[in-house]
Image (cartoon, rainbow, N blue to C red; front, side, top):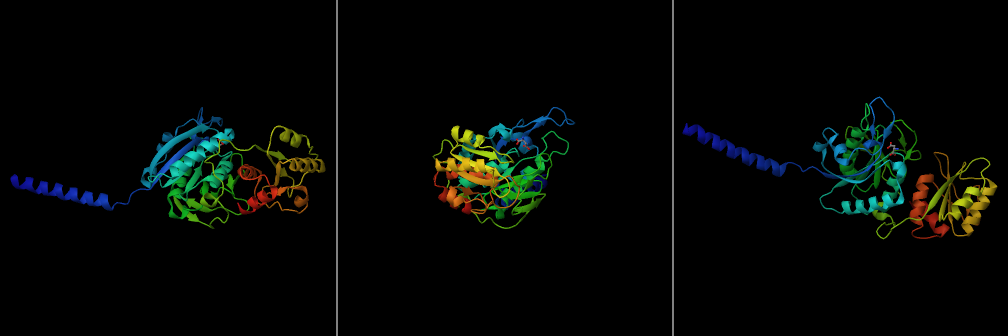
Length: 356
Ligand code: ASP
């Protein structure tokens, strides 16, 4: 009896030593903070067969809990920043989110951040954040095209891949990323291209930053434009952003909406031009007048791909305009808002468009 007891004491002691050693050698999970902002990924339908739904119904804790095996990938914590459809995204939320993101990235116990967000304006938020984030730690925006209650909801898989991308050592220094439907994209290059398809995000000019399958990323080329710690822009002292409007060009475009935007207080205008950033002669006259009065006008394009070239069909030097290069109208608007926090000189802003 006494002998058996001695054996079991020895067994317990050796097990305790072994588990202590295991705890010491077991690799620690990366620590990921989710900043949740709403969107379809947090959306709920009235019934599973119904295609109507409301964005931003579920809280960050529900999103994390809904992903099988996420706790084996990373040690997860979450914060709710807002809970909105991203069609309601605005400058105030951007500033709040960007400031909090910088605080969280500076925390020694956070290795990476994943932001859940609606897909409608995801490319704009991602690009804004990529220009004002003061850290090399990975930041990945994740959303979904189907609400959380849908049959085959894509949110949990996208969140799993988003976390896997964020904790991958190769993600460091790539700036803010967007991950959906097994792809990873740079904030600067990505556009939403389809109203409802799961395969909606494309980097039309440059291609994706990488692919990701069941948590295993394969990375492509590194970014070669300014972002993150190499960006000159900061939200630290900003309480608001300059107003920049986008106007869509078409046959028979009148100058009226351009004049109205200037009158309403726009400090910058982005024209979603036809072709290579073109517009009717009356519209071009109106933007030239606006530029002479100190409004910075960027010519972008309503086309999904290609560059808007400086001094090609339009004499930007003479008219005082800026050519958007690769920037589509939503990206151009973000960059112009931030550029206007530094300068109102269209030549300096053209240089900014060349390097960001
Ligand atoms: N309207 C939604 C949003 O942007 C769409 C989505 O998340 O997919 O919030």
